[in-house]
Structure formats: structure tokens, C-alpha cells
Image: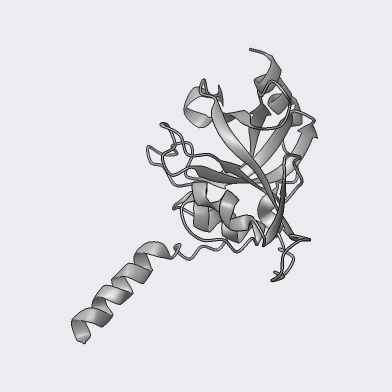
Length: 188
């Protein structure tokens, strides 16, 4: 029994995010961070969030502050990725707050606030995006497929209602660099 409890405690320590004074002090995977930042209560690999949200949370292709953008599974993102919309700069440029994207101090997992995300889809539907990457000091060169946005509101067609999600107050900074976002998006 003691061995079982030790293994259980170790397993919980591995999946639970470390305690932090601030949401932005978080170091870990994108999923627990997105859940804490958005208030949307979905679990499992990032790429599974889109299907899990069906019948629970409203979904769509238009960004809203506090919504979670679900990156599809791809060769570069075998587990997908989730990021929370922190600001809408203009129709094809957003800022997101997310974790485990860029390296900081040589390691992944850190939270990043108000990061530029650019819609490069031909239809302007956020199905293909580029993301600011710290190691490049600008938008990365890769295009990532995305499923869409999960809103923190219950799906109107759901038989089982969920509570409206409450995004974290630290979702966005006081003075995000809007001009830098636009330059990153359109200067290339």
C-alpha cells in the first residue's frame, strides 16, 4: 500500500503544475496553463480539446479575448498546442498568452504573455497561423494548422451545461506592444 501511495503521489506531482505566485511564473506544459488562464475545464492532450469541447463549450473561427485557440496535431506539434487569446490587435493579428512555446534561459515550458499570432490562412478563418518565437525575435517560419477557438461559454446546443469560464486577470499586460505585433505580422 505504501508503494502504491508513493507512486500515486509521484504521478500527481508530475501532472500538477508547480505552485506559482503569478500565472506568468508557470513552467510546464501548455494544457494546464491554458486551463488556468482561460478557466475552460478540458483535460488531455492539446489536440483533443477541439473535439472534447463539442457539446460543452461554444466553438468557432472568430477570435475572442479569453478563448482558447486549438492547434491541430501536426508533424511539428504531435500533441497539438493550446493558447489563450489575450488581445485582438486587428482582424488577422492577435496576441496570445501561452506556455511551453519559446525557450527561455535555454529551456521550454515558460509562460509568455501577449505573444503575436498571425492568421495566414487564405480565407482569413484562423485555420493556418504563424506564432512569434523568442529564439527568432519575431514570427517563426513555420505555419501551424489550427482547429478554431473554444469560447468560455456553454455550447447552446449542449444537453449538459457547463459554467461560463472566467479568464485569469493576468491574461494580458498593461501595455502590450501592438506596433511590434503589426510589424512582426506584416513586415515579412
